[in-house]
Image (cartoon, helix red, strand yellow):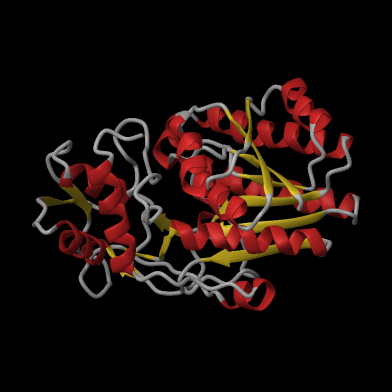
Amino acid sequence: MPNILVTGGAGFIGSHTCVALLEAGYDIIVADNFSNSKPEALNRIKTITGKDLKFYKTDLLELEAVEKIFAENKIDAVIHFAGYKAVGESVAQPVKYYHNNITGTLMLIKAMQKYGCKKIVFSSSATVYGPVNPIPYVEDMPTSATNPYGYTKLFIEQILKDVYTSDNEWSVSLLRYFNPIGAHPSGLIGEDPNGIPNNLLPYICQVAVGKLERLGVFGDDYDTPDGTGVRDYIHVCDLADGHLCAVKYVLKHKGVEAVNLGTGKGSSVFDVLHSFEKACGKQLPYKVLPRRPGDLPAYYAKTDKAKELFGWEAKYSLDEMTAHSWNFISKNPNGL
């Protein structure tokens, strides 16, 4: 079976993708520096799958360390998750984000070129659709960004397109995913951010276990069914399966394809909150706060291309996503 390098494989989406790869019979090598993940995630991946993996504690900014991975292993394809991902922090510390996310990717590409590995699945984001496109978002829409985090995704997409233009032997899959939530049904791995969460569901989880006082709802006067922001929430296990399909695709096809991974349906902040309340069996306190600058009223994906290219579509419902999140946080209230 092919040997897949997973950068950032101990993180939220990375760890679930490692499970999907191992269960599908692939051999994997994980590279992670634990800047926003924990070593325990790797033990949990092994527990869930009953399989072993190879691990390198590596920072992608160190070219020699990255090249060492390629020198010691025959790698058939790379799934590239590693990168900083907090929008607010990227606005406060743009140089940190540009340096880490873009330079780290350049070092990875250099190592891949040197060792003749020309197949990559990149963890992009729906943020590249910017603030002006109509919904649902379709892959051929013009791209833009509103913050340094979004620009790093946009620039890396462009870099990978340019790499392919310079060498048509490359195979590149740019996965633009929407709002991943949920956790592995076993409750062994899930979203475990360091510090106060930036995303809605981990925040709700921390309110549910009494770590945070209440949820802040940023705006209830949007032009949406209940006034709160609407997003396309996708189960992290569906997302992991999407990466598995993308790897199979890049191993067989050359070229560059941008592909949305979402459910194609929008859910509001209150939809998610009330679904989670059902899962945990109690009402959770919240306070409506002013809108955040830059937040869009609603967005969701058009997902036809993923079905057509990969034969993939999301399976889990919102209630299953929140039930799995509650299962994870109730078993791991202090994280991994």
